[in-house]
Amino acid sequence: METVYLETTFISYLVALPARDLIIAAHQQITRDWREHRRQHFRCFVSPVVIDEISFGDESEIKKRLELVRPLDVLAASTDAEELTQAIMDAGVLPEKAVRDAAHIAVAAVHGVDYLLTWNCRHLANAQISRRIHIVCDAQGFRMPLICTPEELFEEDTDE
Image (cartoon, rainbow, N blue to C red; front, side, top):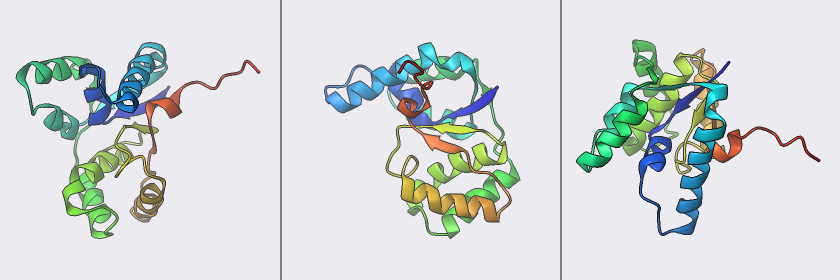
């Protein structure tokens, strides 16, 4: 069974009130659809970084997010993951404020996760940045997960 790391934005989109912005509202619906129709085909994980990030904000929203991730396995943030995070940051691929984004990739890579599911298109689901981070992961001896949005991880339609 293939594996998926659920990044913070994925979790947040699942529990957030419907957005007024049509694009974000569509992303929220795609996220709910993915969870309903595709989640069972994957073994899903989060990390302590995700748990930390979803633990901030409105108390009722925190509770919803934590309840959602409770049944998921939590991947350890190991020394290897910390070193890979630092290597990504040292490469200058991401700005300093995005160290947690580097940590998401590092934890998933160190644990050999197949996909990293996110709506963070600024630093994660970004083709140019992903290519550069892929180089860093390879140099450190890790296979970077395929970083994608839920929309990209739907089953191929075979009805032609």
